[in-house]
Image 1: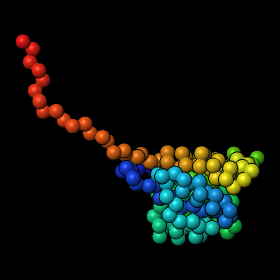
Image 2: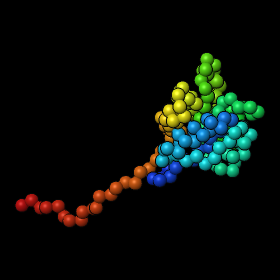
Image 3: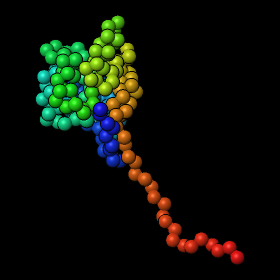
Image 4: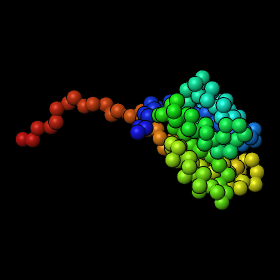
Length: 163
């Protein structure tokens, strides 16, 4: 069972973005860069490259496209689970009629969560905003963030005596 990682104030969750589409990788990167608790540490355009990048970059979480040429997302997920059982993985897909089946397959292979790539944004800015609203919380749900506690000065004076 994977547990939540604890991040100190100012730490950022390291994300690897995996998608075969340049446009989608850019939109996801822009969406995540807008969140101060997330940092995109790398991108990969295929499952094979994702496996190499995970070893090189040691991300905390991976966004993984379901449909890619060569090693698809489900095959990549299976291999990542063998190599890095505690790595957090969120599958991304254009949910179509077969989306429920793909989601169940991804979850059965060890995905931590699934999310849509887009909700039909009419512009890149709208797509980025939708991704930011839906994807960022999904990525951060696996981590706890400590905040700097403000300490009140301790009082050493004796409490007043009642006469």
